[in-house]
Length: 96
Image (tube, rainbow, N blue to C red; front, side):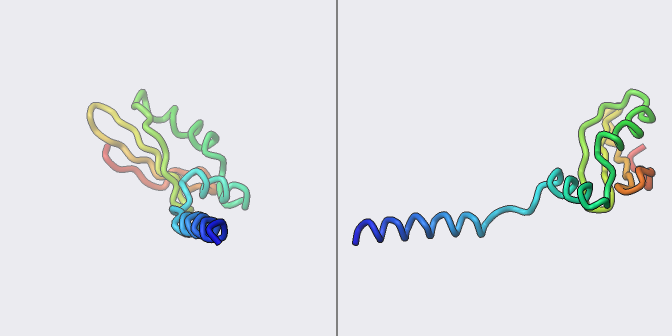
């Protein structure tokens, strides 16, 4: 009976952990969108945008399903560049 109880408690702990998993990460959502043809690969988008940023430090991307938001820093100011994930076209800028 003790073995059964221990096994039951272990199974309950694993099940509750699986149910409490966090939302998919940006990179997982981006990969899924790419796989489904809804998005260009991030490196391809970065190759288009980085040369236009004239030496600003690239801090990384965010992905919301339709757009990539690339974060840069120049002179203490944060610059956000929003890029359509499917076309690679810049659709917004802020912080400049």
